[in-house]
Length: 419
Image (spheres, rainbow, N blue to C red):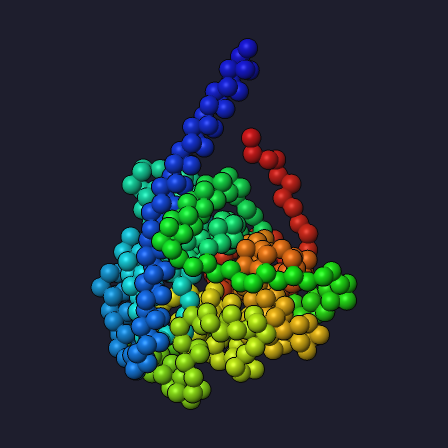
């Protein structure tokens, strides 16, 4: 009888905790769904305005000065996605000012023609809201960290219309090799709530035409060879982005001068290339590559260069949509060299490069399903597995992301499991 009472008490306590988790997840999803949808609309408006008024690109250096001043005035200079990841692992404080600041600065970057994405901003906006929500509700440290995860997954889902990917991504990205399953349902509820709200706003999805490929053993071998090239490209991507930022900081100490110079370099490169294809996120070019067409065989390198300058010199946004662009255009050009049809190679390149850059294989496989359907799942799974293993310890979030276990050697923690 005593054992029954003990187990009943534990079950009741777990039920209360689970109920609290769901309430926090729903609240985080609702708030982040609205904010994420407004952010989506703001970036879309900025993109449309820039496309209709090409002259605005020439004000990009001035925009860089404004972004730098905004961060200086709000005391958020140097705060970014790495701080969000550190908050989850170590409880690091996230300033609430980060939310409006990254919202505004990312919109400005897109408005004036910087080459950037928006998912970095999504993680920061969601993480900032989740952290503040946990503080306002006086949650303990563990639940506050979970609220931060819920916020991150919610805004990601609202922006990309991929709630399953968003859920697993935030669980994988913090510590590669370990997933805290206790946060799975809350993050999923938060993601689905935010995604539902984004649909109420009438936002379009990021889904593409389904990729269907008949099972072919020889094509799988070709995809495996192509995955090696994608893994190498992911290393190049991460190293160029990181080294550009470090070099810019070393050569130009003053943040204002650095931002202005970066804006001028983006303008110069745009004029030299004679196209605006690489300004903004480049969603239209991603769709074109997935149809098997690119305007230039070197599009992936030009996008990498302009994104590295934009982010490295102080503009804001994210690297994941540019990674999609680079992966799709790289695949469209390089995949056929391996005997893979260009549209399939572009899709494999998009998902594979994302996997190699963020070190999240499960989220990447889910991304392939949410974007392209499950008709070519074995090919996506193989490419993701190989790019994850061969990308080593490189990644977009190096320094904040922990890789707990070797990628190519099996290890397991045999410590006594928690009660």
